[in-house]
Length: 243
Length: 243
Image (cartoon, chains in turn yellow, red):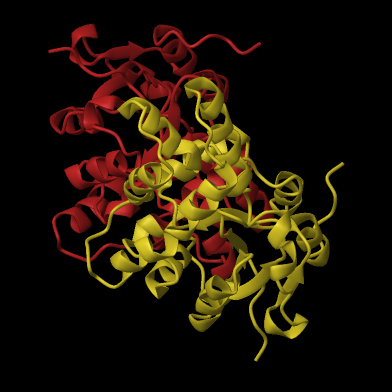
């Protein structure tokens, strides 16, 4: 059986396309200055992100109804502010900090790689971030998506299969015509399970330089493509440089 | 009561942003040449578009389940090819013609107007065209949407209220923070009914120059804005020229 050609690439976003850790640290350090705080924002960022999977899991397991990432992030944020001893922020300041996830910057190769890939493929995020978050992020950072797709469209968080299959439906394609691109094996395994093609992107700096060596590169054979970054992905898929 | 500020503009597409009639005529005349046909494509375009509302109505009234516009257009197309005596097209040629609705060109003011508006507002289509059709159209013509929204996301065609309210939800806004922009009063009336703001855009050439005088301009008081085109809309909403 010959697989059909890939027509669209869908991307995990937090960690794969954007550097969430540096973004949280950047805005946090501004807050240290503005409010006379002494928070270790690298530790704060990691702790906030570590709350992410458990908080999605409660939705995925049906313990609670769908809530978007702003709501889930806000719950963890309030606990963390207490844990880190921050008690002098207004509600408006807390809300602004909560929306730092809308204001993350792409890795340096992300936009050059996406610009090459979009000449040959439809490109879209497929993130657990909600439609509005992904739209704000793309508009602020100039990420050249052809359309925004999100787990929100299915009411199920990744790696639930509905998240992938709903995106495939809106692309009006078969699963094998869509390639999921992610820096996380669990996301790729769930995609492959429902018939998508898979591309692993190595992001050793996702959890900061000190943990760079923790990220093992998977075997070449585990996914359709194993790439160093999004420019390397474009090269491996044969997308020409545009300059 | 003071209304909240408008944060996002959503646009009807066929007739409001793009000129469907000229697009169908353009591709049809190429087919006349390639296949030695003698079809009056202006008449064909009008007849095809006239099938549109009845075919949506059958879905809206629950006579049949949701089908996307490619499927509805294809049904009308096959009937019209017979009616216009065209019997020498391959299935591939018929399918290519059917997808002319993905290949329509914007009115000359559309992209300049949208580029101005997008500096101040989120902008998205909100069309009965499906996600893939609107994505292909935007990519081909360079329409600078911030995200693609479609009636398809609700499983209900406009003017069913679900189509508008689902879009408002994905924008994470209240209805009064969203303005519907359309050249068709029925679309605007249904939007207003569920709390959206409304902007009428005059498109006297939608049905061709001979019917330009049939389009009456509504009273200024009927909608929040009555505009001559999308550049005029940007001016009335105070969006600055970008050049």
